[in-house]
Picture 1: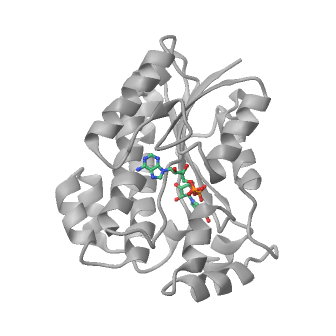
Picture 2: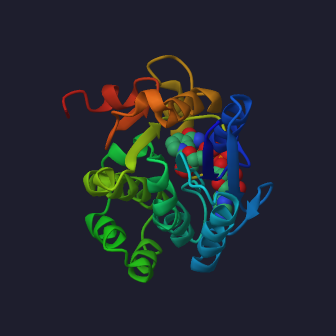
Amino acid sequence: MAVYAMTGGATGIGAAVKTRLREEGHEVIVVDIHDADVIADLSTPEGRALAVAGIRERAPGGLDGFVPCAGLGPYVEPLSRICQVNYFAAVATTEGVKDLLAQRRGCVVMISSNSASMPGYDPQFIELLLAGDEAAACALIDTLDGQTAYGGSKLGLTRWMRRNSTAWAQAGVRLNAVAPGITRTALTDGVYQDPRFGQIMKEFGDSVPTGSIARPEQIASAVCYLLRPEADFFCGAVLFVDGGHDAMLRPDQF
Ligand code: NAD
């Protein structure tokens, strides 16, 4: 039996990951703003500290894996909340459990998005994320738009993972990411209902090459695979699980 921790396990993709891991007999420590072992609001530094302390208390023997899955969609306001949860909370909680992961040669599966590789990001926003300047990143993103905030938060997170994967592997912790495509969850329901994004999202969903949007379980199976010992040569990888959208949209960018 392995010991895993994750954020955002109350609903959607995270709930599917939690369910699958528990069905396989593993221990899963869940952090979320509701319905979790550790209740914490990850948009604040205090909430992130609470989350890390809660995991540390429950996993004194270390962790085999960590999945920072909590996230907010592009319709959430203020937009700074998107980068606080999607980027700063994912990085802070991952850093906060690094030594627990190293103890058991564990791994991290970040939850990116196929939005991360789409055009239209703001280079300065990405630089501020990667510099760890939360105040400046939040101030800038509040002047931009939801798609730039969402896609940018996921691009920043994926670059953070790629930049750190060598040093972390040398310290005994592998970092990888799953980049889901459009998946039926509370987050996408919110996007569908938003007058600014609803129609675009519907058309995007209709254009998935394999024919339909994903169920959370289809994303969870990739996350759980990367957590398993048999995936122990994956390091710094970004696994697109998106019904072919990324390949359709940028076939030659490889
Ligand atoms: P969801 O809304 O069902 O799940 C998000 C989870 O994060 C919820 O359990 C929620 O309570 C938690 N959360 C949100 N804000 C929080 C906060 N401040 N503190 C603590 N927990 C908080 O949505 P989902 O689609 O399952 O999203 C899971 C992850 O997958 C997110 O990182 C999202 O960006 C990513 N993703 C989703 C899609 C999609 O189409 N649904 C596509 C690509 C990536």
